[in-house]
Length: 223
Ligand SMILES: [Zn+2]
Image 1: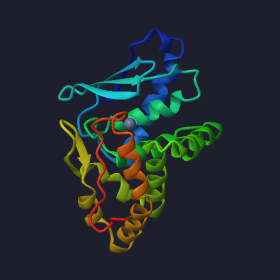
Image 2: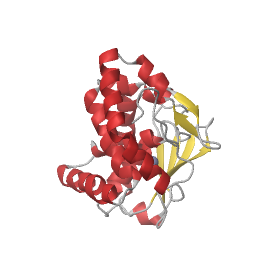
Image 3: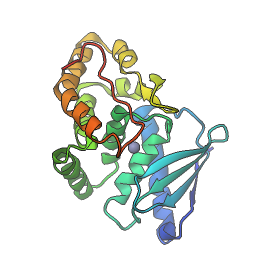
Image 4: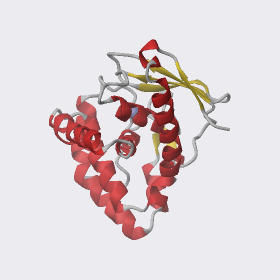
């Protein structure tokens, strides 16, 4: 059975079929990229929520009911990227982790056309990185990690969970690394060592902007 996408805000109504088709396609591709969702995903409400961080909120996990809040309207050039990113979070909305944030942005880029991709990449690689916002460096780091590994290594990554901040979960990167072939594991460790310090600094500087997000360098990747 497919997922039912429900438009909850009048601001999305005029483009409702384009928006729900995009979300549906994105969700199929997210599962191909990152594996099965932790909870069934039966019904997803799509809501306009300006002036706030976009988010994916579980309404009833057992029933597979969720809400995705997007900060811009569908005609805005950021809409597809934001929606694609949040659809990535549907695979496990309880994970609050900087590795996952980077990964869902690497995924979201694959859904965009070439003009949108250029805007998106410039935004992360130049704007956010120069502001020392963790979204900039984690995007770059996870893109390098995806390039250094095979699709099958990324597909199982969200299964590796550990308790995170408060009620949230985080990624168990040690558990994931252990599963990788040794040559690839070394490549990933090098990438983590190369970006870890910058990411750690940015995470600390922005902890009040992004509360509850975990970031831990795995054993052997200290910088
Ligand atoms: Zn996110």
